[in-house]
Structure formats: C-alpha cells, structure tokens
Amino acid sequence: MSPLFPCLYAAEPREAIRFGEKSLTHAELAGAAGSLARRLTGAGRVAVWATPTPQTVVGVVAALVAGVPAVPLNPKTGASELAHIVRDSTPTVVLASEGDQLPPALDGLVRIDVPLSGTVDQLPPEPADDAPALIVYTSGTTGPPKGAVLPRRALAATLDALQEAWGWTADDVLVHGLPLFHVHGLILGVLGPLRRGGSVRHLGRFSVDGVTRELSAGATMLFGVPTMYHRIAEVVGEDRELMKALAGARLLVSGSAALPAPDHRRIAQATGRAVIERYGMTETLMLCAVPASLADGSAHPGTVGPPLPGVELRLADEADGIGEIQVRGPNLFSGYLNRPDATVAAFTEDGWFRTGDLASLDADGRVRIVGRKATDLIKSGGYKIGAGEIENALLDHPGVREAAVTGEADPDLGERIVAWVVPSDPESPPTAEELTDHVASELSPHKRPRVVHFLTELPRNDMGKIMKRALHV
View 1 (cartoon, rainbow, N blue to C red):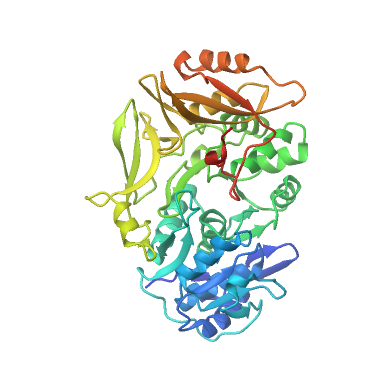
View 2 (view 1 turned 60 degrees about the horizontal axis):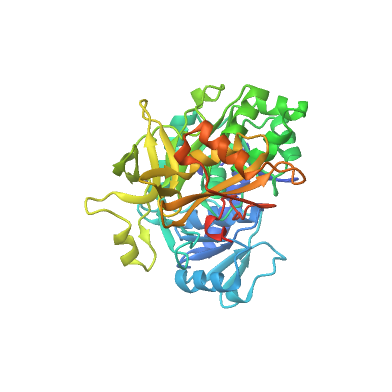
C-alpha cells in the first residue's frame, strides 16, 4: 500500500508544522510520531484530546502510522456528550499534551502525554486502504452524535482530488486557525499539507493580524470559515497590509458553511483575489471545489464548483431546479460506528449516500448549495424556496451585518419566511418593512420575509455554522 505521508518515510528536512514558536520538520515529525506509534500498537482505538497544538498533530499521525483508529475529541464538548462519545468509541488510550486537565469521562483510559521528539529506525508497514483511520463524530443535531468511520482510502482520495483541483504542491504553506477535531481543520488543514510534503502554520486562535503576519511571511494558502472571512472583509478595505497579504496568496479557501456574497465581493474588490469555496461533510469528506484557476477573481460567489475527480453526484427528487445531493465515490465513510441501522438509512437502495443538502446545478455543472433539507427548504404558498438566496439578499442591504432565514408554520401559506437579522448599527437598525421590500425587489415578492427578528448575534457552533434550530421566539 502507498503511504499516506510519503515525506515521513523519506524523513524530509523541510518544515512540516508550526504552532507559534514551535515547529517540527517532516523528519522530526516522523521521529516523534514513529516513536509514539510503537507504544500504540494493539491499542484498539485511541482518543486524541484535540487542542490546537503540535501534540495533537503528532498524536493523530502516530495513530495513523500505527494503524490504530484515532478519535479526535473536542475539548469544549459538554460532559454528557463526551461521555457518550467515549462509551460509543471505546478507546483504550487518550493522547494529550503535558499539563492538559482532562475531564472525568476520560479517567478510565490510559493517558499518554505526547512527546515532540523521538527516534525511529523504520516506520510500520502501511495498513490496508479500507482500514479505519479516524472516527469523527457528527454534530448530533438530530440525536446523540454518531461516529463516522473514515477509512484511509477516503483521506487519500479527498486530498489527492484537492491536489488536482487546487494544484496543491510541496511548495505550498498553509495558514489557518481552525479546530483540530473535525474534517476541515484536521484532515484538510493538517493531513493535507503533510500528504503533499508541504507545511502548515497554525495560528492557535484565529486573528486577522495572525493571517496578515503569516501570509506576509511566505504562506501561500489560507483556509477559513465564513465567520473568519467576514472579519477579514470588514477591515480589508482600510488595512493595506492585510490587503497586500491576501493579494499575494495563491489560494483563499472558505468552507463548512456558505460564504455570503457581500463578503466575497468586498475581499475580491480590495485584493483582486476571489475566495473560492468547497463543499463536503463528515461522512463524505470533500465532494466539490472551485478550481484554483478561478482564484484570480472570476469565481462565482455562491457556488462550490463542480464535483471533484472520482466523485459521482446527482440531484434527487428535483423540483423547481432544486434537489437533494446524493453521492458515490472512494471518499465516502465506511459507516456509522455501532449504528448499522443509521448506516443503511443513509444510503439509497442503489448505493448513493443521501447528504440531506439541497442544491441546484447551473449550465456549466457548478453546484450551488441551497441549504439543509431539514431546515433550509421553505415551502411557502406553493413555492419551494431556498433560505440561502434570501440570506444573501438580506446581506446585500447595508443595514444588515448578519442574517439567517428559517420557515415556520403558517395556516395560509403552509410556511412563512422568517428573517433573523443582526443590524450593522444596533442604534439605528433598518425597519422590517425596509428589509422585506429590499428582498422583494432583489428576488421576487413571494420570497420576502413575513417576519423579521432583530438580534445582537446569531448562535453558531465551533465551526462557525449558524445553529438554526436554536432560532426561535
């Protein structure tokens, strides 16, 4: 089997990871991870206390090298949810940084403090392609979190497809401040550079100043979520150092949620660089990506590009140009841990995975995400309406800083459109009538919100996604 990380086996002397002042070369990472991997042999499953530190990277890589499935744990997870994840995944070992205070749910596990140095003569043989690599838990919006079992082939397929779409090479230096317990920050943001033989600089905690510093110091790529790019968009027009740093980047990539069109435009106008988007989920890893060739400003805001190489995609139950995304390909998970019923329910009879996401396709095959089938498709007055286009229309209004759109029961319309708005100026917000008229003029009258609620902030999870189920009066 070909190795996931060829540069580890080659003991490359170039930098692999950097967190603040601490960095490791590929050779040093191989030594530390290889030495730890020997201690993990036969461990069954290994939990990783996934703080934004080099210890998390060494721990995950060591588990992958040892062929032991790793279970990344979000340090902010509540006690009952963490206890569920530990019971469900049954790890025998927990990897942490020295000094980490671990919660009682992990008391029964053997603790290993991850070393950042070590020596190894030879790394173990590469496990089979279908061997479990990671067990990543979903957000649990429809019940207790489910563990998605991600095989090694899925990691390799996704990262190699992104290499083709983005021209990702060993010369690229990625900067990001994403958490390391999920797909975006860990698989794309850390394992991606390691597979390519490049490097990643982790900010520890996202800041605009950190992005400016690292891109100005030779980083070529930035990964972020819409909340991060929104903060960049708010200041990029006035911050010449930030403007120059972004303009010099090879790729600015946004994911985990749709990036509002106004933020797209503000960044592109200031820098000449388009933020390109990609689309995926825990169970599928990456499905679509805007190619690097459109990063010169010609990307289409609101689209996530065509399907990646190797991904088959179709729209099911299509009506009014909108259907549910269903997919097949080597990038898919093996199933939900201990949940054969949920695994069967997630697939159609002919083997397509039901994403639960709604989208449309344009004439050039670009995918435009409308939203979640459960929360973002509003059936009002006989129309099927996607919440996303209304949110973008609201965000085009200068008085709106953030916006979310939901549907609620209506005896006449079936569902009425409800807008949740954070005003740009809380002291002088736009009127509800002004906003509804704006949407009606931008889109069409039947898409205007019937109710507008003003908030000081929108509820978001750790990945910056708006938690619409928390929006209610």
